[in-house]
Image 1: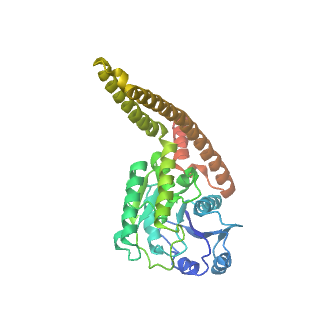
Image 2: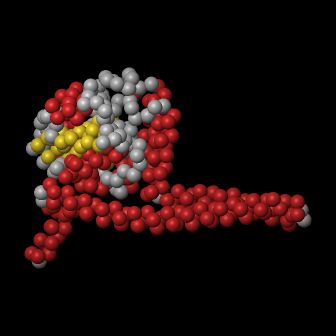
Image 3: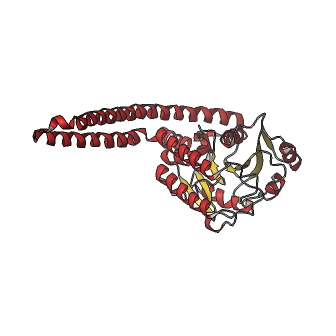
Length: 338
């Protein structure tokens, strides 16, 4: 069982060594632990610090591409190098390295595909009262959108099984944290959380320049991801509301018409017609989105199998060690015996 701990980095030369020193060297049930950093176009000597420390793999971008791109590049490199479990942590040593064992334990015990660290948000001193409330609210929105029970959605301290990592897709350029939870929940992966500890702040967050900018980007990410997985429900609800409003205005006009005063309320008839047409068109958009969503699921399944063949070939992994392949193999063997 091989664990690779990946760390996305952007100008982290001053804090990276502290983070690396805090990482575990041995975990029961893990045969091999390796370390990987993603140098996201750093202008300092982040990569040199990592190599001097002894990091096994360094993925380097020539220019800054953002956290989401770095995260996906890290997953790709980890899978190609034979990782059975991938842990993602931050380069600013925000998370306690000793808690990586708690993260990977549910995966080792086959209880989860993805495990997310739950920070003690309310007791974290460098979080402002506003940030704490927004963290709780954002996590609540993600839980509703993803149908999971993740209490700390923005947490970047998380572990993925090899199979789960192959299924992950991130399409936004901002961050991977929210989108991957919604995707995993809608794909019926087993997602759970474990309580973790945090370390004192070494530097300010670089993910966003203002709290309201973070809120805006996060909400857009959640809505966009939700639309990818439930377009029919989303547009059907909006279309139904518009159509019901149109019917209400039509009934209003009909009442006045029966009372002999219809000519003075033609605006109600016009508004009713407009709302009904727009409502119908919105529902049609939802139907088209549902067809596209079904096609996307087929493409994702194809992508998963292509990734699996490619990564297993490159890393030399035995396909029979994964759940789905093992199940098929067992059925085949039983059939041969019968």
